[in-house]
Image 1 (cartoon, rainbow, N blue to C red):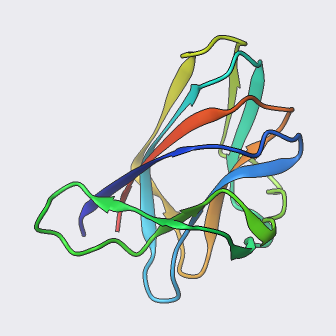
Image 2 (cartoon, helix red, strand yellow; image 1 turned 180 degrees about the vertical axis):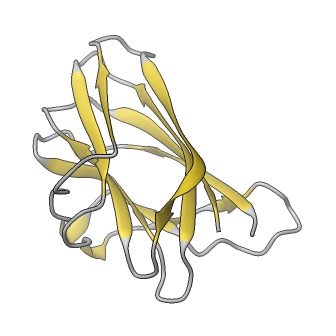
Length: 142
């Protein structure tokens, strides 16, 4: 397995919606090692990280993770910021992040053994409150 990462700037700031989804393919699973959330707007925000009850349908403009080692193959895991039908709310959250209304405030979340995303599944960063625009970086092993 190789290490991949990707940075996204969120666009969905509405309460009770996913602002980012990390999606696997039908043949590859992934392990999230780290998620970094940094505020890009001065808005107090509460995020949750969890498994949606249903993944998002037809993501628009998904981005594929980037290999940190140049010689590694292209990644297969993607991230999405918008969908025809958004992912549903997780029943429970692995982590909750509360950030103040300060641009640059952030939090690093680590998963020492990896937070596994099974094949054809996803993990979402969920807006528990109305949230500000943020930069979210994901590091994973796939």
